[in-house]
Length: 304
Image (tube, rainbow, N blue to C red):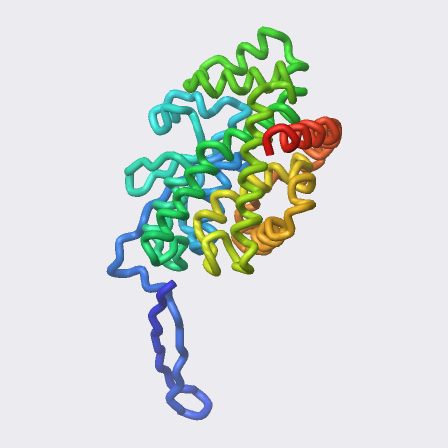
């Protein structure tokens, strides 16, 4: 932040000496204030990407709008106008709408250049975006699928058929509804569960091999959007008690994950489930961890 120093001069009544008091005030005059609004849900792994980016940049002057997914606020008409897919987060900057969590993180990095979250070399930026593309297209689906298999399946199966229908009513993305229903009704036998195992087997192995040269982060010695965009997804898997089976034989991926959790932005953005959710996720995760590990080992034996 930029500050301006102001000096206030006065005479001391006792010694008739000229004294000076120095103040520092934030230099906001002469600059147009950036108006940032973020629509998000605290327990959303995609929202955590935006929150972590804001924390990395030290941005605190933004307006929060909480969109409670379990209360179906994402389907309210006013929010659908902002985000037709009924997803969070959504960023509004001076009236302009930016959607999709990785694009929001990239936008914030351009809006607040320091500290940079992109490499300076263009070829490295392209390679970083390849990592982000994989986490967007496959990594997210994998985490969402396993979340439904382990946590949301029990909740939805306990509902009446009409209540389940009401839960999925209003969904704006058919493929997402089909994936969720498959995970709920088929559990670990869902093809989406197997696809999730394949995806994260590949991502964790790739992180491990990339980090094997001793680098600090995925793109080298600079923490970038490649690391940031993966962090909330891995945090969710950790909450589900699924990270340890994957990382136990991947020491470099373990080192990366430990470093991510040590970043102040990880704590400040409250990345990962709340304490109550960790307990629930942990209980549900432990119920299937043996079956999950068997599925993972079978996958490695057949396809790894």
